Image (cartoon, rainbow, N blue to C red; front, side, top):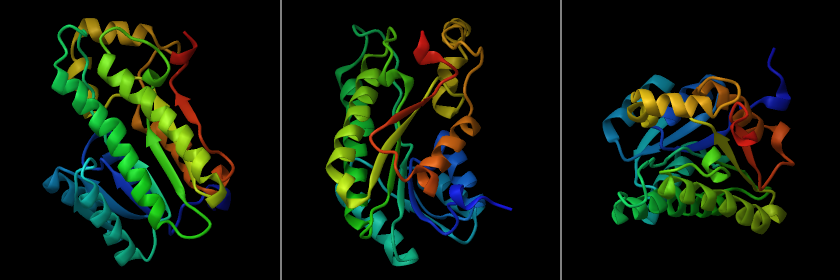
Length: 250
């Protein structure tokens, strides 16, 4: 018997970045728990396949999170199909790791554009569609919101900005009942990190920095996400919750 305190059954959730990695894992997990999903990504074909896998209560909408008109059209589609928007989950992101002297300026700007500007566009647009009484907004930040790693100038800057954006929006929208939070994973094994983790030296250094001695998995992040989306999270706002095996303790 499911616990209603942690139930998301029947919620209408917009999930950005759903076509790969973390977003894919979250899409299937949310669908299994009875959520109705508007899946958003720029990768049209993989997105449609994931929507098919998630069942009849999932629809795919190709959209770029940095394009406000595309985001609005996608969220309107969620309202048209399901009648409302209860929550936004944002797993869209770019990871660029390189020494500062080698990091292209366009790569730096792109990281800010997707990881920060995209989060702002998604948050503001979704919040406007949420019904009186508010909704739930959850972004995926990173331990890089807090710790300083070499070669992470683009990623860490963008994720630190994202955590502060979460705090500001949470303060602005608290009186509407809308909560805004982030989850900060340690290095998690997904398609986005796979190329870096295939380098033995990088993998060894990254692993040594995590006191629990292993990398994260998407399954590690599901519990905190469900908590923030469910009645259990109704009084939590403005937080970045680190799910990191102790990485931010070092």
